[in-house]
Length: 417
Image (tube, rainbow, N blue to C red; front, side):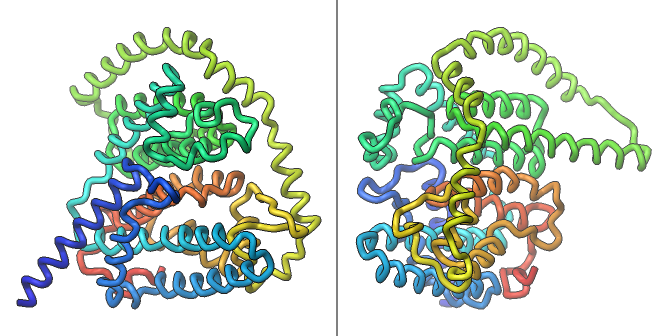
């Protein structure tokens, strides 16, 4: 009987895990609120597996952070009751995204067969396919996007963006910058954590370049430059280590085939790049890159530093709708945002759960987090729960990868790092 119960629980774990992964990458949002359809299923999993995850050090940190966030939200209800609904939605989103982390961590530490590489490649193809539609027919792209994310069209009359949904390519998400940061992170993750051929590297970097132009994201371009620089450092380190070990360079027939395939691909693709750079999307993107000096961000941050007494936010914040001088003021900085919303202690807990380098995980394996950190610093990103679900999946796969995977079920000692 116990064995049958365990088998049912294992099947349930597998079903919820794959449902959440597929939902985060490919499925639409709930039409009336930007939450995934699998969120109730995730809550059910947490209830059924609570006794397994409650003993974890990271879950205890999360629980403490949740109570601080809850109290901060209650303070926000007192100081700004007009933002009741949005404060509650932000609390729901920001706490729920960590439940993905505990689901992914629990499942992957007990199941070594999961192959993330294939799913990420399919996801990147999906992103590129929608970007192609965006470049060919913005009206058709707008129909696709509103099918996946109905709320992305709500703010059309509240912005100066021409056509809003079709102005910049944002995938099926709310913010065009988010998919730019995510694609940078995925490229680094694949190159540094998975076996990738030269052909796949070239295809992925060309795809990323295409996405960055479509997104018109200056922050994404900065992340791309940083990502390429970091990868170059990693490859130089590998070269010096091989030279130190006096390893010989061998060219296998498959490598030769890939080099020839790469050469033929470049012959076909490179002549088309100047043509693409003359399209309206590319010209508008380049104009935006030239005009966006980043000065506006620094002015916003300077205003925050001049008008906020951060000592008032050491213990608690004032809820997800950030207010300065009793006026709503988006900080365009994840660090400022979390402190103003939920307090400095909660901010430290958040950084511990998301951005810390885990013990036993090399810098090479964890370097993909840098584009996400850049995005968090200059764009916040937190409102995109599906993106954060993917980020936390990458965190778990980095720590519990082939070289780090535990052979025993998850216990409290696994998260002591």
